[in-house]
Structure formats: structure tokens, C-alpha cells
Image (tube, rainbow, N blue to C red; front, side, top):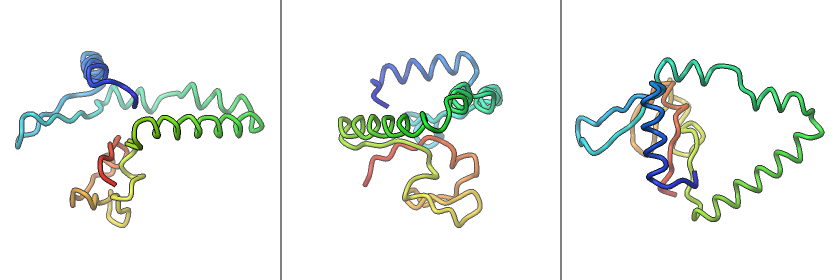
Length: 125
């Protein structure tokens, strides 16, 4: 994400103050924290998307070069990060789609459908 730990921490705190996410501490190890999107946050995520509307308005002839440029930008950003990736859980090789909601081969855990839409930071290759 090309952000420092402090920036991410402050962003998460700001989202929590706005009640868009909620902090969940692990019962096993209190140092582990995860975040869940609140109903208020989901309403924003599910709402109108300015970027989607803008893409619809620029037409298909402008979308192709834009997509190529963004792909090149992301590939270079990944190269600079040592190829450490992040993205949606359901898009990674550890996600098996043959189970209801999915299954994480890395963690060996069943996943709820909503969990497959969460960001997953891949540390292992």
C-alpha cells in the first residue's frame, strides 16, 4: 500500500472514530488486532462509486490505455515493495472456492462469504 505503519494506524483510528470500522482484539493474543467494517461503513462501500461513473462516462477508447497505465504503475509499485502484495482474500492462491464461503489453505480455516471480500496481505510465496 506504500504507507508507513504510522499512517495506516492513524487512518484506522480515524475510520474507527467515524464508526466506519470496529477494532477486534484477539482473545488468544491481545496484541493481535483485526478490523471489521460496520454497517455504516458498508453502506458507504455499497453506495454510488464516483470512479465507476467516471469510467462509464469516458468511453471504451479511453479505458484501455488507462487500464494499461494503471497496471504498469501497480507492477512498478510492487517491484519497489519487493513484490509484497495485498488484495482481496478470494483472489489469492490460498483461497479455495469449492467450499461455501471459501476455505483458506494457508490458515486451514473455513471462511465466511464476507471474509473473502476482505483485504489479505500476502507475506508468503
